[in-house]
Amino acid sequence: MDDQHVNPFDDERSAFLALVNAAGQYSLWPTFRAPPPGWRIVHGPDARASCLAFIESEWRDLMPIAG
Image (cartoon, rainbow, N blue to C red; front, side):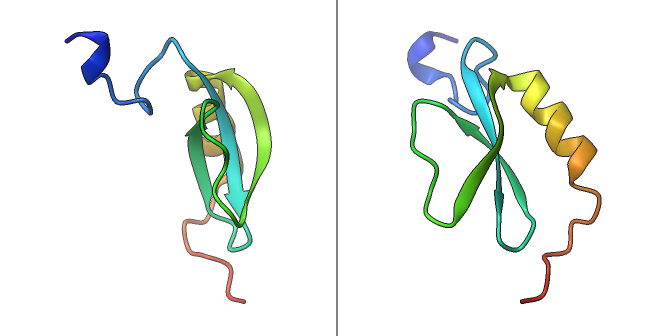
């Protein structure tokens, strides 16, 4: 697969961020895009694997925080 067809969320060569929202949900996010409104950076920029490891260590309960 050439570079034009690589999903930016799967590109191991790129830098990533780990984001969290007010409901306590986490997301992997590429650094070339600004985080969406309502999300804040909690880790990174870092390698994709490091961001995923951070998310896995922090996000224990997949249910959103009731608000």
